[in-house]
Image (tube, rainbow, N blue to C red; front, side, top):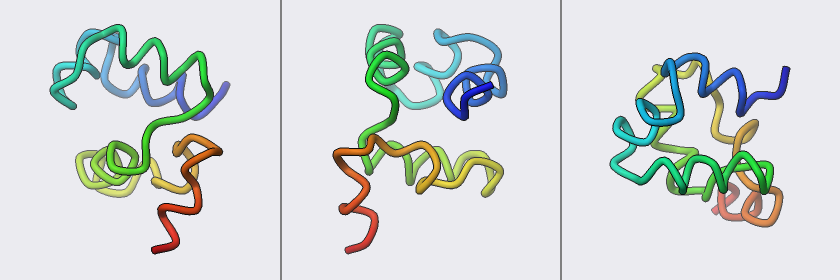
Length: 69
C-alpha cells in the first residue's frame, strides 16, 4: 500500500484528510494522483500525525528538495 493511501486510511477518508489540512477533497485527490503532497503540507502532516508519516516519505518528488532547506 502506498504511503498516501495509508495516510488517507489514517484520517479515515479523503474528505476527513482534507478537513484536517483545511483543503478541498479535490486537492487530496490530486496529491494522490501526482504521487505526493506539497512540501508545506507534508511537513504539516508529519506534525499532525506526530511523526507517524514523515514528510520526506509523502512529499511530491518535484518538491523533495524543498525539505532540504
